[in-house]
Image (cartoon, rainbow, N blue to C red; front, top):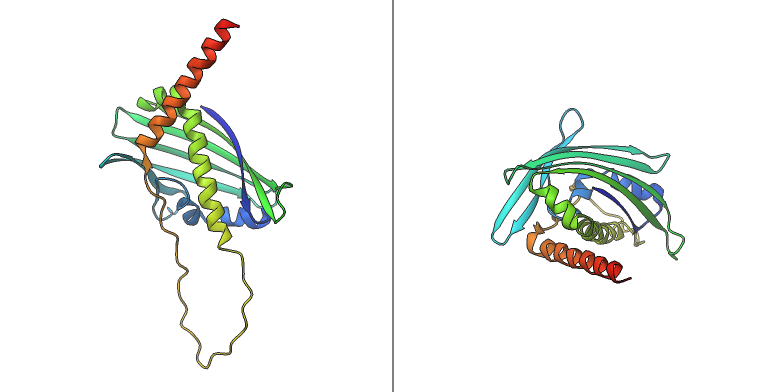
Length: 206
């Protein structure tokens, strides 16, 4: 399944790619993503949770990420499986950053190109409405990333001399994004299916 998309986030490209390099932070912006501590070989084990009402199914896998800070680009390679009708996925995502000319404030356009190999039940899913669902997931990630990056805007505050040095504190991590809702994705697939039927009928009448 081939997918291409583009979205905008706050900040200059040089700053945005360094934020992207904070993999645990970015994982909290991806719907349903669960990330575990990084392996010694640099890969990231984890998965994605999809909820079917009260039941949740977890896709387990591993991903590797590469960044070219000078070229403002990068890539993500991942593979995962789930104990559900031999569901499996292999995906490669490449991204490139550039200034967003339509924004009055510093902003970055993120161009996404993704190729995925889906097996088992996911193969039927990709043919039916995979692109529509990919658009929904990308839009959700873009909204969460934009909200997260907006927190990095520094507000100048008066300097107050302290009599004692405060103890260092760990920066708070954002809460993980909720699990993907299979119900919501189902309706996206249904809409995509009927849209294709409508286009086919229209072509047949022309």
